[in-house]
Amino acid sequence: MALQDTYYYNTTNSNTQDYLRKSFAGQMLRYAPSGSCPLFGLTSMLPEASCAAVEHGYFAKTMVFPSIKLDGAIADAVDTTWTVDSTTNVLAGDLYRVQSTGEVVRVASVDSGTTLTVAREIGASDLGAAIADNVVCYFIGNAFEQGSNAPASRLMNPTRVMNNTQIFRNTWALPGTIEAVLPIVGDSIVAESRTDCGMFHSLAIEASMLFGQKSGQIIGNQYLTTMSGIIETVRTGAPAGNTTVAGGTTTFAQLEAMVNGTFDVSTNGRTGNQRLLFVGGTGRSVINGIGRLSGSYQIVDGQTSFGLQFSMFRTSRGEFKLIEHPLLNSNDDWKKMALAVDLPSVRVPYLRRTKHVGYGMDGKYVQNGQDAVGGTLTTELTMEIHNPSAFAVVYGLTAAAA
Image (tube, rainbow, N blue to C red):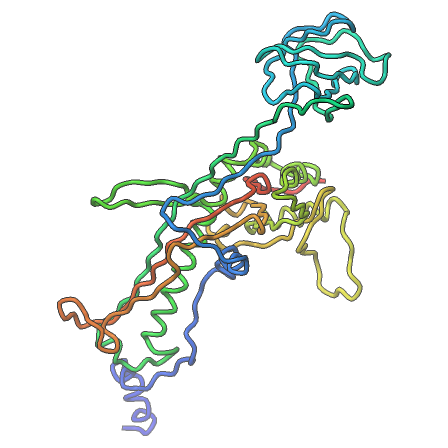
């Protein structure tokens, strides 16, 4: 047999390859969405919050800015008895401006739930005129004579806003033999499994914070609850205009109209003009395209890369910091979403903070003597969205237009 034939004899036999030592990189690679849980991570920097029961919420009051809408035309400037749709929160002494004419009137008395008596032409005397049906008059203050008695009180009833806690649980488990095997990459197999479990646990919380819906049901004689996330809270608690569906193309003016409503309402006097804007990949590309087409951007000195990627955009009313959210990139529909978030309005109260309970380790009991090691992560929490009006959801961002 030739020497060359002897050299190739064993090395070309597929069976002998099993006896050869393999070489692997020393690190386990994990493929996961980049920055998988940005919202959950950001809320961890907010003031700590807790709750004491499964059903948890808060009380809120909305500042009253009364208006009156005419239920019947006013014939002339001397007509002082008005019929309106409702006199709720209208008090004697209130001043109202007639939107159609600019005339200011003062409420002399509230006579019933739909009628009142007014003094006409307070101030300018040349604005009194006939007023058409359904014209709205807006509150502009009140005025009282010297030595007047105390006016009637104006009532602002609080609204109770409730949510449920939700129990998140994730488990890792390994047969005892696998625990004992020396891994060829990464940390110990136990450490790797615990890390995987922790990552998925955080991801489950993040997903519910975005997409969760409040519910309660009986499962096997036990109560199961889920919490409302941001999108559901916007749908049920914010003005209808805060949830929009983009058209085939979106201009800067249209995008501005979709999100500017988030600055309409403040909470406890806080008037921040910054919002986070979580976007999918398509949504981010559309917003970048809008910036380029609108021409409202600046090239920074020293920029050497080709193309533009905006980290923030400004409207006439505030700023939005763009954050591409990995969960929104998980399917084609969500990629086209944008979610405006007022982070200071978010609280995450815990009923039970995250706890890990292991078994089969350090002599801990294993039911039925099972040859295994493992553990379970358990967290019970809910969300408070203190100002739903400061949030917005945009669906269907597809293409930019000038």
